[in-house]
Structures are given as C-alpha cells and as structure tokens.
Image (cartoon, rainbow, N blue to C red; front, top):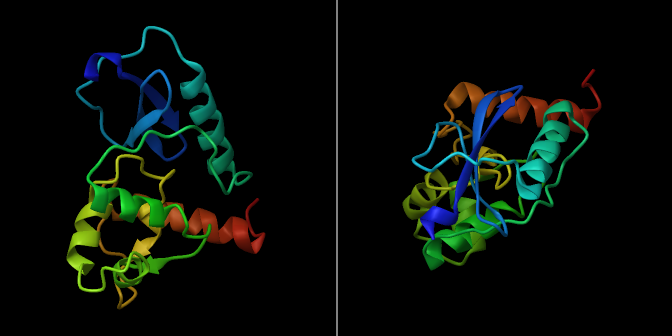
Length: 161
C-alpha cells in the first residue's frame, strides 16, 4: 500500500508541511519531509487539504472536512478520535483525554499516541497540554504549537486582522 501513497509539499504560512495521501484520503500531515514518493500530479485530496489549511491559517476555517485515513493501533485511534473532538481554540490535558477514552491511568500512553499523530493541525494534537498548564511537546516544535494556539485564540476572540 505504501506505493499508492504520495507526498505533496505545501508551503504554509507556518512553514513547509508535507501531506501524504492515498487515492481515497489524507494519511499524514507532517512538519518534515517523509520517505514517500512525491505526487506527479496534485490530487483532489491534496487540493482540498491545501485549501482547508490555507483557510485555517487565515482564520476562516475552524473544522476540517478533507477525507482522512487514520492508521494506527486501536489505542492510538481512540486518542486521535478524541483529539478531533477538542473544540477550536480550546485545550485539553493529556489526563482529560485519558479520562475521555476511559483509560484513566494511561496519561503517558496518551502522550505517546498524541506524539505519533500522523495528521498535525487537522487532528489537533497542538491543543493538548500538560495538566499544570504547560505546553508539553509538539512534533513541529513548541514555537509552532504556540503560534497555532495563538492563531486560534485570536480568531475565536475576533482579534485577528
């Protein structure tokens, strides 16, 4: 199946993002280039993802509708499905996610699954923070996480230009 996956580079306002798609859905959105061949043509999935990400970065989109193909363990999928429920411009703690999926003692495992999220921004792992309010980690770096959260807070408050 890997040979059917294609990569496309999107130069977002937040820096380069690498989109990975199968013929039927978006599989990955990464801050770093992946070991997948580049698409020879831009597909409708890449176009939809690009357009929705552009709208997100300019503050006119708060939910994504691009078809997704999440691939992971049952536990990872449960965490990622819960991430999709975090409202725009809100944050949940790793502990709250563990509680929501009824795995109260799995806070570290939630953190690990969060860190392996293959669809940054779209599956909003940047909205997960530590219980003490600190940001925790982020695959794109803490600065990128802060920028994404700031963007969402500004849009939500109506302060974005």
